[in-house]
Amino acid sequence: MANPPLPLEIWQKILRHAIFVPVFLDSDPVETYGTEALPYFHDEGPYWEAERGRNSLRRVCWAWNLYLRAYDNRYIRLSDVARLCVPAIALSRAIRISVANCYTSHFPTLSAIEDSVESKPEPWQMEILDGRCVASMDVIQFLTMPHRISNIRAEINGVPILYEALAKNQSPVTFLGNTRYTTLPWQSFNLRHTTTMMIAISGDWEHPFLDMPKLRHLQICTFLGDRNYQKVFRWLKVIGGQLRTLYWKGRECPVPLDPNIWEMCPAVEVLEMPCDWRYQPPPPANHPIRALRVDMRRIYHTAEEFCHIRGHFHPSLRPGVPLNVLEKANIRTLANTEHWLEEREGGSNRTLIDAIFCLRNQADKQGIALVDLKWRTYEEFSRLRFGLKPQTPYII
Image 1: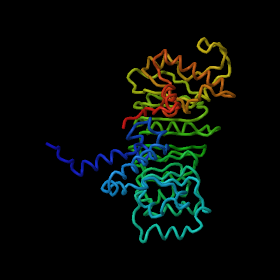
Image 2: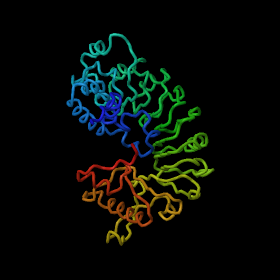
Image 3: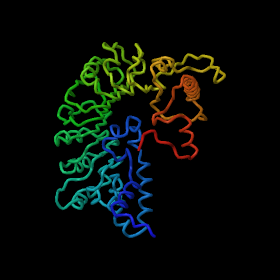
């Protein structure tokens, strides 16, 4: 007896699962997948891989083609619209739009495209706007009409005029990532829904972010020469208790913390502090910290020591806390802020590579994993380098 056919709803669910794109099309990726997913938020690769699979599935039968056609152009690079590779009318249906490398010169007939986009203003589906490469003001103004940004939930490194439009629109943004501009109208934003924030601060910065009940993941970039760390400390005293991720990127932090970072951030699980930071006292035994992130290039010491692992003298890497202290605190991951350097790479990186691999071997002996920016061990990086499919560190 033949099995009954699957209901239409089940087939549609299977097809949606087959073309699903984790992280890249998620407007709240860190909260959904964890801190390890953050570097993958900028990676287009999984989207285009899913698109190739979707196009293959469309050729199976007319019903699948009809259903999957509705998922065209979930991600659009505005420069592709300018080159007529993507129809302008598709912009209103895109979930994620990138303005990278798109300038007024690419839009000689911007008004004509404006007319072709919509006959009447309807809310766009755009949830993620990637403004990492500065586009012209005409292009930004084209995108920031109120009905076009009404559904935005994530914004990445846009120009100030874009943030002014989001603030005026009171968009309930969950992901705000800007590390280029230090003077933005944060006090005008609706930040009650923000879970992830990446900001750059300078000497004239003040902390107006008091109403951020959902903030869980914070990255702060302090520029060289900034000495106003007490302002950062005052802010951490307000929101530190709710943070699960704190990345503080800076060269130095000359002011001691009182209370210490473990008391100020009692729930933080992944932590990066300025490169000269000494994690003293070490975390208490009941603290949930599980990973420290360090900038290997900035803790790089030029004084050479003989290495019994590498068999010659080379400079050493000295994180702000000894490896045996990490082990006692049950911290099992030490993360670099950059990708793995290939061991065969020579030149000025040769001694740094020696130091990194020496630290890796020392960490292995303590049961600590040394990973790179994408949270890959060297073995996982090697699999990718030789064409083997890598294992993603987050759970889908």
